[in-house]
Length: 447
Picture 1 (cartoon, rainbow, N blue to C red):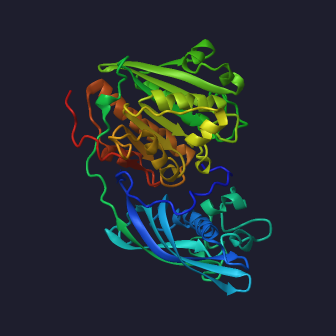
Picture 2: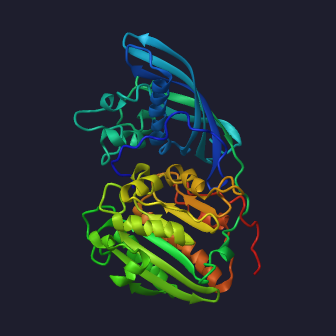
Picture 3: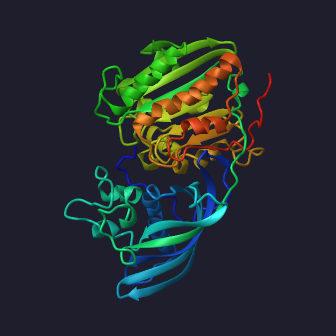
């Protein structure tokens, strides 16, 4: 669900410090190491900052091929690079040699990457500044996605000949095949969402926010009338919740202003509904939003409700485009709307970012917002559910409902569903995983 927005990964030797522990039914985190080189078209030797930027630009291209290799992977965006040498290879071409150590998410495939250590291939362009033009055939680029065919998206979708027969790039001349060494982290073995901590301390209600971002911002913002790809997911989720006993109420006018005290929220089209259910452990309230969510769209309404959800809801689920990292970037939201988003450090929450590559985009940056003096990683009061790879709209609905059913089952009957059970139900070969669950209960808590 990526959109055409050019967004580089963090520049200049990101730290490779250990991240929050992780669980995936078909994947685990790993440390990945290799020695690489990148060409830079220029006569004069680059200074250290220019050299690191060139390496970072090349490393951005790890995404595309790893999404189609037999054992899929995705970089976390936490890495260190060490420049070893800079030299003139040919007149007008500098070559930068470096060592890379970074954290990745790696699929476990029998016979390929199912061992604690091993070798995993990566593919990188020799010169990331020229690779797009080199791979063009006429006006089209057969080395990347037919729809997202522009240069700005190339790093995320490209794949060379070994995994894309249409691509005529030549190994050694145009791209490099890297034999990197991985060392897997051990997955969390057993962990549970902290269901007993979801209820609001004042009201006793479990507040859930469920967002559906539109695929096409030009579509009708009423899901009952819209042909947008996300509209059908909204309707199916609402129908599924109705079957579970939730009553539906459309919120308009004054009711919306009670939630977000800003009249400008009505300047763009969107739909907001509240679904409620009384359970043996109190009321469960779900606010469902449908509308534009892009950082480059008319999304003020979304950003205001999203801020509220981050600060007030026990559970937040987002479905839609990631915008290559920009749509749910808290600094971007704060800058666009002049807001200060303050994640509650003492409140336990679950965030499920059900969008493309959310493992890379919306992982550590959110944990950092929950950090405190007695919670160095920010995981004690936050669990984050992410996807490592691109995720199709048609897969979102059932994955959302798997989490919602687990919460409903606890609220109704006191049934505890583990994250390991949830991961098996939710994973759709997109490297779904749970981040930060190492400090969660290892067994059901009897209350």
